Image (cartoon, rainbow, N blue to C red; front, side, top):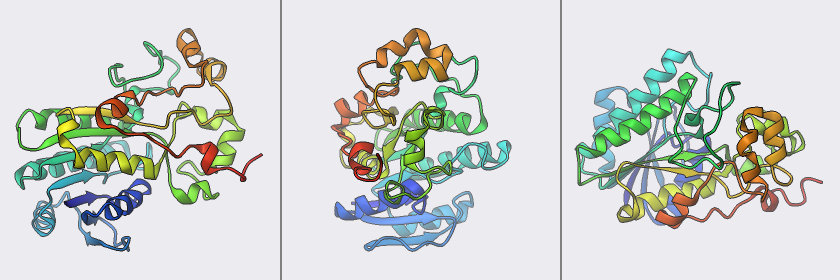
Amino acid sequence: MRVLVTGGSGRLGRSVLSILADRGHQVTSVDIAPTTPPAGVSALTADLLDSTALQEAFAHAAPEAVIHLAGIAVPFARPDVETLQVNTGLAWAVLAAAIEHRAHSAVAASSPTVYGYNTPSWVPDYLPLDEEHPIRPWHAYGLSKAIIEQTVQALARTTDTCVLSALRPGYVVAPEEWAGAPTQQGHTLAERLADPALAATSLFNYVDARDAAELFALVIEHPERVHHGGIYNAVADDPLAHGPVDATMARLHPTTAPHSTALADGRAVFSNERARTELGWTPTRTWRTQLEGRIG
């Protein structure tokens, strides 16, 4: 299958390119910065907010499926207005182009930050957090991802030939980060495990980049399984913590205390059941297996 991937040079994008190539797809990566792609992947350098560059990229790749990862990747990395403009503008441009160029499926990266945690007033309706839970973003990055989800749903109403969806990858861990490279917040995985306050900022969620990449691949390979306009959490089964996080959640996020007992059996704060049930996704790489022998 011909697949166009935007943002292929990023933490998640690199694994998406490799996984797709390994699965036999004809992959084109488009990124704003020059990059060296994995073997078997072609790369274009383009700013997809430029309408001419966007059309040229789609004409070159002639994609049957589109995976949209490009954008400002973390909260507070850029001024708020820029984050909103870039992330939402890119999503509309790329997903609309996927429909225009007759791709049969298109999927965009959202984020668990849409739930709106990490404010003193945030109170979950229940735990674990699934896709039916209300979203309450409070910063520009989370809001941009909520708008991306709304973009997916809006455009889904305009077409019955291109299946659109959005995935919410958790705290993405690239392969080199299991080996000790700093994660996106500047800490190593071992440091995040040793200090629960570090992992608590993302509610202990994580996902191996290759596992997340496999979910993106499943979405485009099996559009018949995907709920048109649907949203899916993409997180590991377990929390990034030694043992259950019920007491730790109640201590570090006191407003969750009424519901944190639901996590006493060791489950993650975010549910991945929808992706498992509807898409057949099984994340297999856990911090226990990937860090074996590296931590005490």
